[in-house]
Length: 486
Length: 99
Image (cartoon, rainbow over all chains, first blue to last red; front, side, top):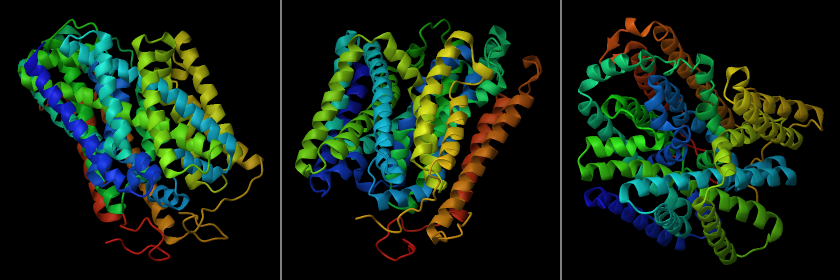
């Protein structure tokens, strides 16, 4: 064991626990368990809102291989990653204050609450809950596997013990703290990611002998590494641009992101979050992926993409600093996992159980069920992650795109187009999910259809479906309630 | 933006619609800037690249300056365009200033 690396990591986990306990004590005073546990009582301020959004979708890029991909592909992947700057302002501005106002009038606590009131349709609710549970369960399991690998590579524990450590850490504070704990730890983790990536970038540039030397080495090895087109020239402009939908503007359809757009205290918090979020997400994405590219001349020949960051950190930084910096990817994974865990359990408890099974449940009963379900799901994911099935990894890869194809139009057009109705929403979700799965399969066998990422065509098709079915079947204008519903 | 014929949109929704349009406009500017520099300056053979502050020019303009420009634009929008308003319904019927 490498104690100077390990100590800062343990410190990091200790701080996280402290936040969970503190949030729990705050929650005891709150009057509505449901709204507090799953939404933090709509009290997030600017910094916390920005950080929790960044931390939640920030790991969309670790999905895409992140720094590891940049290591093998070069600057072209950094260009691709920079499409994510849009997430810093786009979601909050476009869902915006209307979403916040309407969510308050609906008393919506989850994205599905919003869809339920807007479309007033049981199939829409059940289909939404089902897609959230399936897609996010898979996405979550994959992050747990990543977290376990990271702990394994630092501590030398076996995979199962590392997984156990990671699972316990995540579960304890999600179960006791709920949304507020998640949002506050996200803030802390976001700050760790911000500073960590900066330190590591500086370390790598120094180890590589300065930018000129690094780019010289890259040019000597393969000039394609410094072009926008990837090491084999495989990245077309069209393909890279299609990531504007997958990880840029399309994240507006991700339930774990949308729910955050209804959680802020007031417009001032939202305004601050816009500035902070844009700066932080751009900064982290730029640094993290540049580290990947610059690591190549410093430490050539790394074969497993996920190991680029741990190896380069141990190589270029003193042990204690490496520990601190490695807390950053761990932070990213934990914050993704905890948000997803909470979202899946809210879908089960709030959207299915309370809506359709036991509507008259008492506050105390809901509290027990929520914590129980969260714990139960966590254990389920743990068991799956011990011996990850192939299917799971595949599901995880397309979880984000699938959710975007399913939710983007029911959310956005539900908010801004008065003729949107439940038939449109249902058609849009089914079209999005089915065509996405089909095209994803097609692309993995025959190469990308029309040269774009699998998410693009389903998003277009589901838009068409939404508009056509809304206009064809029972076309009727919808008006939002003028005041809070009783 | 578009008010309906029957029920005129309430004031706060009109503002919210305008701000959503601003969000879309920002994203369009972002995409054009990003694409424009990356695939013009970057499409030259790599041997002919010029470097600014150690980075290839296409990358410097597209990703680094592009990011700074977006932060600047978001700042301008937040400071001068966005409206500070109440998100609740209980105080006044049309949402007074929250500060």
